[in-house]
Image (cartoon, rainbow, N blue to C red; front, side, top):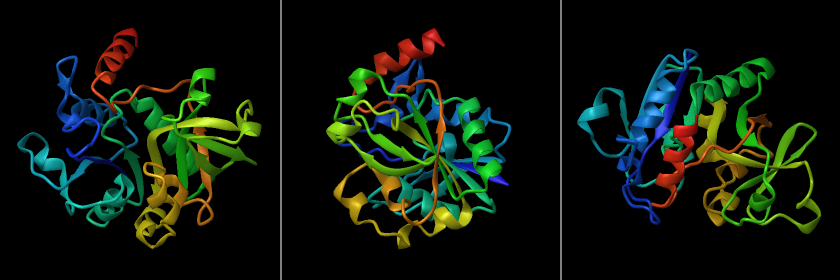
Length: 229
């Protein structure tokens, strides 16, 4: 059985309460919930959060208030379900589609690997943008994450972007708190670093980056993207 867990929090520094911001009349979080719900490979779609909301209370997994990373919140939530595999869809990714979710699931089940990370080809602008998280791929596996790649990697096809969509088997995500988190704590937002060296992290490539909501100006970009889709 495969469940999706959407880790949600309101305390974003750059855009407080962004999961409740409206995109084309619907909150960012509800876009994520609806997109995941359309994925027929999933048994359940859960919201993992420390606060109660009547709208999604029936699918709420209550977690501790303080988590250093979204992955840590997911790792706490998985033990409250009966699933064997999990999709982690970040709550600021309203443009990730059901097809993309199915893609990472297929990759995980096909290869029987512990973790799959959704990736995309970088544009020239994204390669030099320090706000874009990049993954280094070698021999079909992700071996490192960075925002500022070495000069030798800048034009390499082995350098790709990542978005907030992941898949794991139960053991891989449940053991997350026991992994070496020093690099994760030093580099906020690079949660995949905790898995590298412990489990194989397999990239699943999509055609392009789907815009996420990090700052208020991103709302317009997301709306324009959804209107074109």
